[in-house]
Amino acid sequence: MPIHAVMAKRSHHQPSFDGEPPGPDELDSPAIEAAALDIPPPESDKALQKGVWERPASAEYKPTTDGSTVLHFDILLAHIMPPDGEDVKIKRFVVYELTVKQDGATEDTQPAKIERRYTDFRELYLGLKRQHPAEMANKYFPAKVLMGNFKSELIGERSSAFEAFLTYVASQAKLRDSEDFLRFLQHDELTRACQFLDERRNEMAIPILENCFRLLNKIYMNRSRPVLLILCRLVAACTSSPVPHHAAERWALLALSRFETLCDIDLLPLYIPLLHTCAHLWWQRGQDQKPITDRLTDMSKQGINTANTESLMQAIHKIDPRTETI
Image (tube, one colour):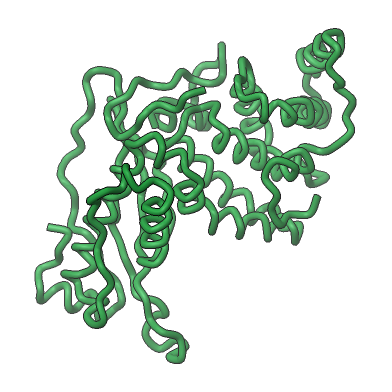
């Protein structure tokens, strides 16, 4: 299924809970689906003495009027690590806080945020240049410097360059769908979340996975491979403990909705474990399982093996192996 270009204006996604009125907890709402860089010298010097660079307040939000949404990559904050007084043996570096929003008729109130270093942006740039030289021809990227890495002016210039670079990548299908870009967006957070899952610390993993979902859901289509994989991983994390997480049903409903009319045959092996996971969750919550069991019965009549032979996490692991215990 082709993934449409982003950054240019695009139409709203449809709400995922058919027949359900959108509420504040429905993360598939339009807000989600739809879903200078310079401090004056005296003040900036003071700020950087504290190890923080911050963009001045932005202009007033301007909503779209044609039902479309616009993807924004913004670096609003950067900080120097390690902070003053901590581990002087470690070479200091700048961490950029990247905020991703998808604004439309209303402002996106649930942005996704990740932190990246200059080396992360450079690794993405070099990887894309190797794999897609035509699309990356003559694209600017800020060079390394030997001195002055912590100056406000340089941090501001790099932030602007990173924003423009990501905006371009997201607008080009080949670059947006590349493994390099997906790795840049989720690898660090997904690795950390899977480590928590491996330690049975699901309550620590779930917020990280939720942020990953919000991020990927703004950049890719609803039923794209990256979005469905992270969504299934989130459902599995919410339901693998004896007592389900309080958000388990919400994410399970969203996953069921996204798997309707799925076109990617490679992701179909996730559907049956997802149905069994949801049926068990419904049983735990004292809800009617019949719509789910009826769906499994219909698939069985079509000759599809619906036996619950593996967990949802095991099915995910076959498609996208990570560190979590299966």
